[in-house]
Length: 113
Length: 157
Image 1 (tube, rainbow over the protein chains, first blue to last red):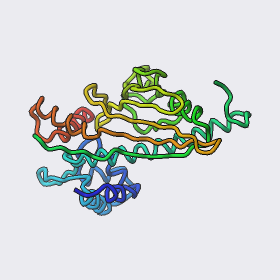
Image 2: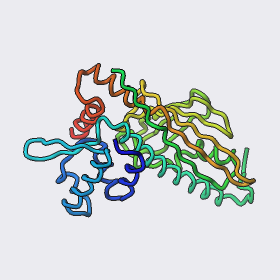
Image 3: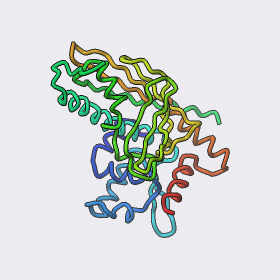
Image 4: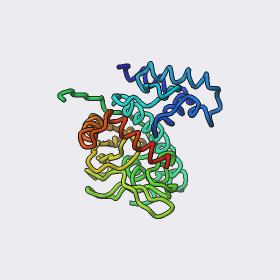
């Protein structure tokens, strides 16, 4: 199993993260994943290869096409996803602390309690 | 199956420019102002997110359609220094009563005006246990994959 830092590095690219996010709701082919993304199919294939090497997604043949999904045995995948989720959430939280402090004229930023 | 998987907890820290009691208040009372809207549980767009201010309180999302969807609940309410939440969302962002992972927040003063907020999301191995349980119950292969596939089918309808 690939380690967490490999996985985080794999998800550092925003397009790759978008591909991974889309797989969170179910498996999909390269063609389906390419739709609505501002990159070519070969680029999506390349992103999937990196995600696969990081142990985040697996693929299987379905008829003539290949479909990808988040690694079903990978607790690593959910862990990595939660890591990303909290990263974004805490950034938004810190911004809200700043924003709500600026709203008040109280220099201590403590308008009540 | 005796396989034991113990994924490391997710740990994150952020320093915010406010004393602990305000940092705690923004995290809880103002949750709806900052919680990422990109991930919601209900069918409709979220109107707000709420953490009820007491141990045993609910942690939920309220959609613009008025429907409330649970995220989890409050395990320990200790303002201004500690908050322990039960996160009960599955991999596909659905509430699962039997799934309880813990999110602990510690608010530590840093200097006189700032607070370091340490987050730990732990017991992630319970996702694996849940997958195992689901596999036993429904006899579906793949555990986690089965859950995801069910969701994909529901989403496609």
